[in-house]
Length: 105
Image (tube, rainbow, N blue to C red; front, side, top):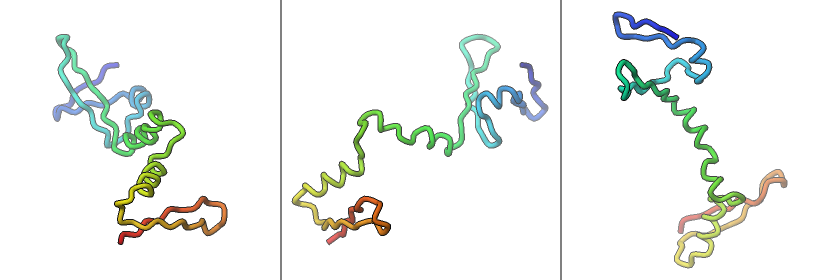
C-alpha cells in the first residue's frame, strides 16, 4: 500500500491496515529506522484503555485458582503484629460471600 507524505510531514494510514491493527483516532506510532536502507519500522502504540485491558488477569496464569486478595487477607489474619481488627460482613442480599473489613486501631 502506498501513501503520500504531505507538506506537513503527515501520512494517512490505509483503512485496511487501520482495521487490521485496530488503529483508532488518537493512537500513536513509534517510528524507528530499520537496518535496511529506505525502510522505517512503525509500531502501533495503543491507548491506555487497550493496554490495561491486555493486562487484566495477566497474573492469573502464574497462580491459577488463587486470588491475590484472598491470599493477602489470610496473610494479614495470621500476622500477630498486625494492628488491624478483622470482621466478617455478610452480603446484604444473602447471596454474596462475606466481605472482610479491616479497621485500623
